[in-house]
Image (cartoon, rainbow over all chains, first blue to last red; front, side):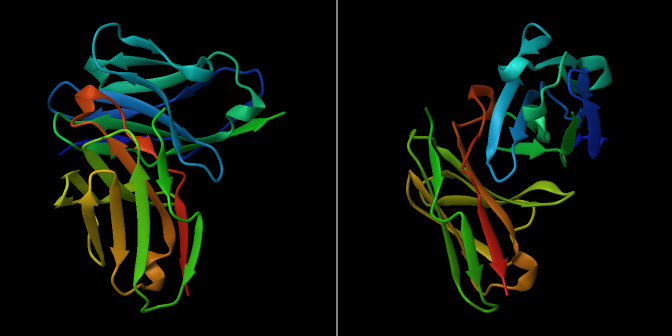
Length: 112
Length: 114
């Protein structure tokens, strides 16, 4: 069965430090991969997506993610975190039909 | 820009009431989804619809039903609200498959059942 694992429930980083949020998926075919961000009280906003091609994808707000098929991973990175990046981040995988599967989320706290 | 709107941001209901949550999208998407979001559990799919009058159960359909009479509108119904249905409810829409693009989300409805 398809599943998405985000092993880190909470992460705290200092403003200006680099960030990596982990995501592992389980899916039999070629995955369609997504990262979403949810600011407090808001719906989910797409940060970036991977369908095929270059395994390093760039997204909005300076985020990037790398697809590693051998590790079944799609980790999200940012070289320098800003206080406004404090939010909850969700990794998701979409299948060839209609469904999307979400991880349980990682809450990012940014220290001044 | 795709826009997904939900009828209420906050809702307070009493146990046993029938509750309607409405969702409207303006991009002619075939698929629409209802999730509930609880701390530590992420998003769990309640129901989705891939066409007008078509629906499929998600992972946690018990206690819920849905209605899709028009392509742009997808309603979630709590037949008899219970306190364990207190949650954030998120509506989303997408094209026919993930291969064609991502889901677009509404702002959510925070439902409290007393």
